[in-house]
Structure formats: C-alpha cells, structure tokens
Image 1 (cartoon, helix red, strand yellow):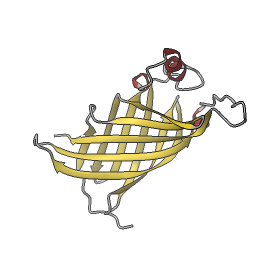
Image 2 (spheres, rainbow, N blue to C red):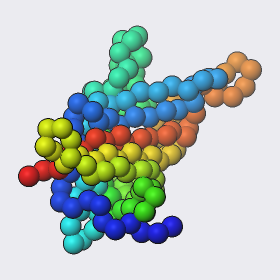
Image 3 (cartoon, rainbow, N blue to C red):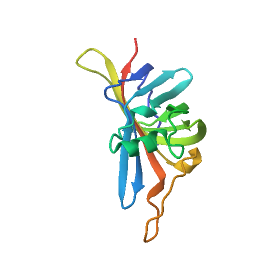
Image 4 (cartoon, one colour):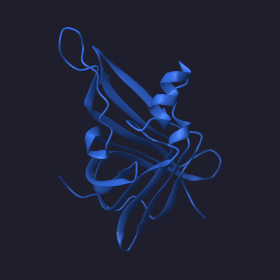
Length: 181
C-alpha cells in the first residue's frame, strides 16, 4: 500500500442531493436496506491531515411503509429512539488515502448518544472540475458494527430457530463532495 500524493486540499462539503448514509442488516433470509437522506458531511484536508465529519438526521430514514414499522424503528426505544437522539454522527481525525483510490479511517460513530470507535474503509475519486466550474470529489466509506453496542438489541426468534434480525449492520456513507470557496 503506497500513500497517495495528497489529492484533496481544503474543505469539501457533501452535496445534500447526492449524498446519503445507508445501512444493511440481515432480516430473516434476506437483507433489509435503508438510508438516511438528510446528510451533513465534510472532508477537511489541511496541515493536520484528513478529517471527516458527518451527521444524518434519523427522521430522514427511507422507511416509509408500513407506518408502524417506521414508528418502531425511528422512535422505538429498541432502535434509533429519534425523539431523544435525533442524529447519527461520524467523526475521524486521521484518514489515509492510498495511490489506488482506497481510503482508511479510524473514527467514532455516535448512535443513540453512545459513541464507539470504528474503522471505516472505502474509496475516493477526484477531485475534478465539473461542468459548472466547481471542484468535486466523491468518498464512499463502509464499516460493519454490532447494533447491540449502541443499545439496539431488539430481537425475535424464528419458529424453526435463528433470529429475525441480524446483529451485524453494514453502515455506508456515500458522499458527493463540492469544494468550499
């Protein structure tokens, strides 16, 4: 792994129309996927290194039907408890970019007011100039967490054995970034 010549300089903010935080978890025999579309994120590159800051508003989760499921997941005490914890945040102080476009970062993920360390890996593309004269880039970071570490321990047994909902959750930040200034 070779460290890249620094491709980013300055502050890049997430384009809210093209960025999201997503999650996937096993559900019975399939995979349940949803996203948070109200995202505020930035990548800051300066003499201190590469830093990530991001937040998603829980109420923006893409679960819409049935309404009972949305209420249970968004506001239920076993899941996001959005009334008491309206945001999910991620913060990383020192990310590493490799020449091949890979990205690695040690950071902290806060869900339901509980902060835990996580390691996120992914890719970056850019920066390039878009047709509107803006400098843009893209970052995709993924980590897998055990939802019980954040107090989300709801479970139901399957009749023939096994669990309805997996404990390991894949969390992905997909960010289209625009340079400030």
